[in-house]
Amino acid sequence: MSTAKLRDFIAAMTRLADQGLAEGPLLEKAKPLLAGLIAQDDWLPEEFAKPNPERYSQYLLHCDPLERFSMVSFVWGPGQKTPIHNHMVWGLIGMLRGSEISTGFVMKDGRAVPDGEPITLHPGDVEAVSPTLGDIHLVENFYKDQTSISVHVYGGNIGAVKRNVFTPEGETKAFISGYSNQTVPNLWDRSKEAA
Amino acid sequence: MSTAKLRDFIAAMTRLADQGLAEGPLLEKAKPLLAGLIAQDDWLPEEFAKPNPERYSQYLLHCDPLERFSMVSFVWGPGQKTPIHNHMVWGLIGMLRGSEISTGFVMKDGRAVPDGEPITLHPGDVEAVSPTLGDIHLVENFYKDQTSISVHVYGGNIGAVKRNVFTPEGETKAFISGYSNQTVPNLWDRSKEAA
Ligand SMILES: [Fe+3]
Ligand SMILES: [Fe+3]
Ligand SMILES: [Mg+2]
Image 1 (cartoon, rainbow over the protein chains, first blue to last red):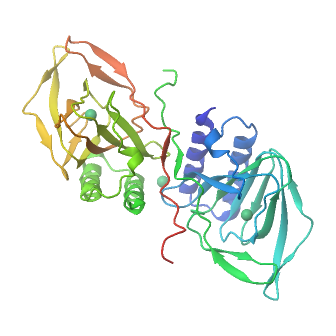
Image 2 (image 1 turned 135 degrees about the vertical axis):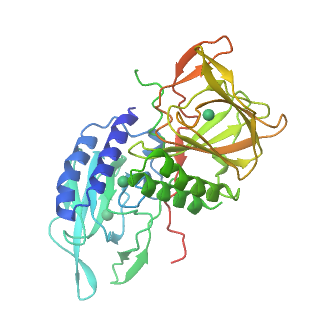
Image 3 (image 1 turned 120 degrees about the vertical axis):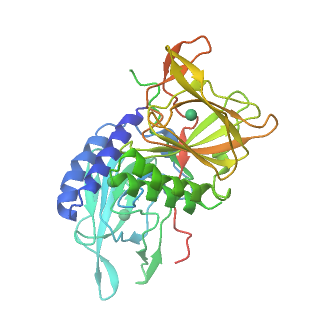
């Protein structure tokens, strides 16, 4: 388990945030960074990869101290899915393990209606969402019998962003997603690294 | 247990690091921030305040992703003490709970010799060390029968800094201190905050 990969990604994302880019150029640079991180599934600590039989889990891996971005492992138990929801900030979804299906929605007459074909993400794939790119979707584990895990990076502290879920009955409800974990990985012990 | 205090301190330290100040002006601004944080002992999560009967503990609370600073809770069991050591970066020591005694040393003819009167830190006190201010000391818990805790901020990732311990026999040995914990506090779940 190499924590160095995750540490290097977070440092690179921090340097990117420091550049103060607009969403387009930022995502153009962040996408290959995330793709590089998820290219091999050998770095996520076990504790942040555990499914919960009751509900999907969203483990915070890192939050930028200035809350310009945050990063989670999104862990799907078999057959689990989200409600229809938006993000209100940009998001990158990188498939690390297993597979998930994302169905896009658009608002029509005050209710969320399906838009286009569902997308299936396979290990290594990276997808983007945002208020400008299309921000509403429903996501589910492709598998009815195994865990899937995607790694998400958001353009803010997703544990603080006020956003919405949309019910099948056409209601819009406010929510803040929070996190499933009380502690995040310590990536910074380099005392055992080769001198 | 308010994680907001620690979160706010880390954000303020990050903004300070972004200013790129020299050590003097930086410490001048960081000292009152740390003094403000330790003024009340009501925010350190239990998990990062536990003494280890075998040795003192150094729990990472936060590391700046660009490794410009790091922050630990230093937990002393009864009667525990450090070897004589240096830091190689600036350090601020804020006494949170209990009391500790710091004895300064200087190098003379290649060995560390005591310098000046030992300093006793009481809750609320903040002390500074650095290669320019005086970097070598031995620190011990003032109490033989209770836990003491100080909160340290260092001018780098102290889990990666190559520094030294000095033996009573006059030897200088290299060491990197590492951390006692595998996970750090998640300070970023703001889903329960008042809207
Ligand atoms: Fe989503
Ligand atoms: Fe020290
Ligand atoms: Mg910065």
